[in-house]
Image 1 (cartoon, rainbow, N blue to C red):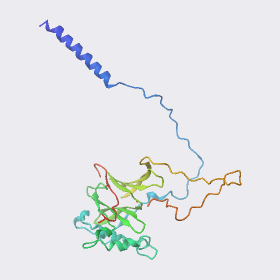
Image 2: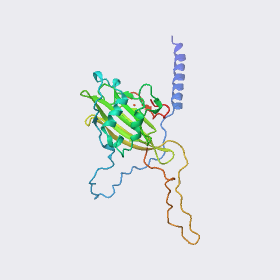
Image 3: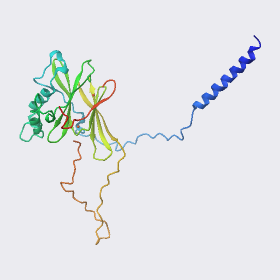
Image 4: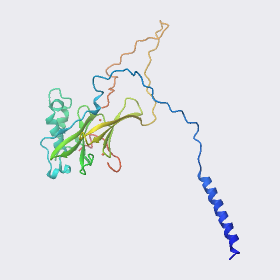
Amino acid sequence: MFRRRPALFTALVALLTATTAACGDAGGLRGAGPTPTAVSPARLWPSLRPAASPAWPYDEIQIEAVRGVTAPGDDIHEVDPVAVVRAEVAAHPDAYTSAKAPYRETVARLAECGRGKDPSRCPVMRPYYRDLTGDGHDDMALGFRLYPTNQTAVRVYTFEEHRLVQVFANDDAVIGVELAGRAVIIRSPAGIAGYEYRTTWSWDPEQRAMVFSRDEFLRTGRHRPTHARTPSPLASSPLPSTDAPTPSPSSSSPSSPVPPSALAPSTFAPASPASVR
């Protein structure tokens, strides 16, 4: 009995040594270098008077009841997406059917939606269903193309008191749409190569609508920067010319952008004309 103690002691010492060495190899605290001094934000123009008008209306709430569209048991899966778009067209003649409507061609394309029609001509894309309002029932995220601008209309619909209600509407140049939790994220092209805009609208239970919550300008990859051209100096002048060249209409490009998942983000992008349903 007593002869086994030295062997046991030796084994314990070896085990403790190995454990200590292993912990040391796992890495301890390491210095991250000098920490920059925190600097509080400097307030500019403290006497600046508040603006008399609101800022860019990203936060405008667009709630609208859809007339003439119902579903048994308020099951939004039974709602016809094409009927919803046609109801919007009927409710907004200035945008779709008047003489100067910007999306008149969309109305003609809607006639191609239905059985026996060419699906590539129908501007309405596949709907997505997700509980975006937190009421335990699915809502519908719907997209359709706007012609002739090739923009994408993104809408969210829910049932409230047996009425189909639009709780989000956005028309823009869109390269992708994502649903994350109770939010809609729209990705749009930027005028600078390698960047894109991402705007987020989140469900507000007090407003009963998706409200603007975040705007980002994000880098998406490595691209060569776009440099503005500087006029060359005139030969007869010792100073460079200050006259900026006037861009021709053909060389100018629009600067404005042309606009679903509780467990994990999911995406849907505008379908090409050959694949829209």
